[in-house]
Image (tube, rainbow, N blue to C red):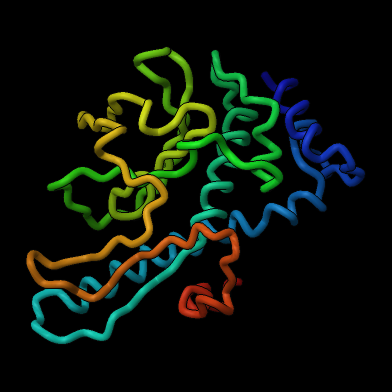
Length: 234
């Protein structure tokens, strides 16, 4: 499996001439790491945005007011590619038995080709579910009970949110998903490429939303409120 991952990355970045010192053959050179760095930043922006959503929910809850709307828009297209990157990195480290990444997956990670129809990122959401205050962040590959194959990756972020990402199997065809004793039907309990997620305190609209831009043209100048959340760290 380690050789396979090396081959996959090499296929996408065959011109690498500056290997990272001390890294294995599956690692990327500095140049291509730099090309993918916006994907890492998109995940940081997502975490920062969810942190800000949590802060605003706390400030606005229990108070009847006509709050000014706050729309925090993150880069959905880059988050999707970041999850593909995480899947390849996860496989190169953990080498899960039975998973062979498709040869074209690095090209999709670099934005050089599109994913098959129905594949990509979806928010796992079920009517009646409530979010909770949690800083837990985790990532793993998920194996299908139906096929016994690794068919998707799962990124768990703040407040118990779970993002699914598939690359070959359409999300609607994943079947039943099991997480922490809970079961979800992929075709019914997912929001593929979610556009806007609004937040309420019981029946009160808090005028806060987390939006996803799937255009592939997200920029910090277009959404400066996200750039401001980076602070002096970026």
